[in-house]
Image 1 (tube, helix red, strand yellow):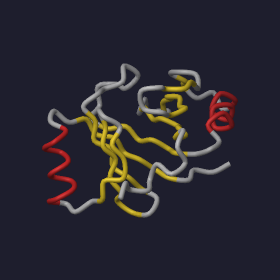
Image 2: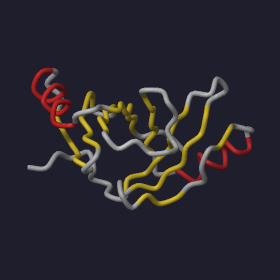
Image 3: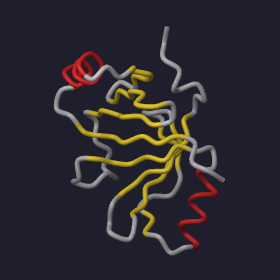
Image 4: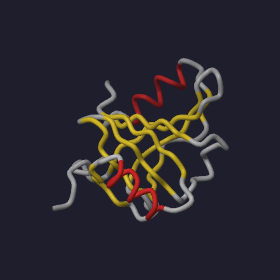
Length: 126
């Protein structure tokens, strides 16, 4: 059981403006377009997601840390057994083509554990 990749999601008012800024100005490679979210590579295993769609599970904070792993159910069980605050049970999200759940750390910071349906998600379209 391990975390394979990490994504920090931010919420933006204008996705095209965010794409220009993070892609052209900052120079990050866009690896995935989910419609309401764009994901950019920061390092080989860390990513920045910019989203206009805001899932109702996400709190009022402006960022969400996502741990990407094939072991979503194992992480869920581990957190349940440890007494963590679980916000949602693991479920498939058809909109974003992921399997995920949301939880909170001891200070109430929300985070997500997810697996992409497409294992090649971080390979940019040619």
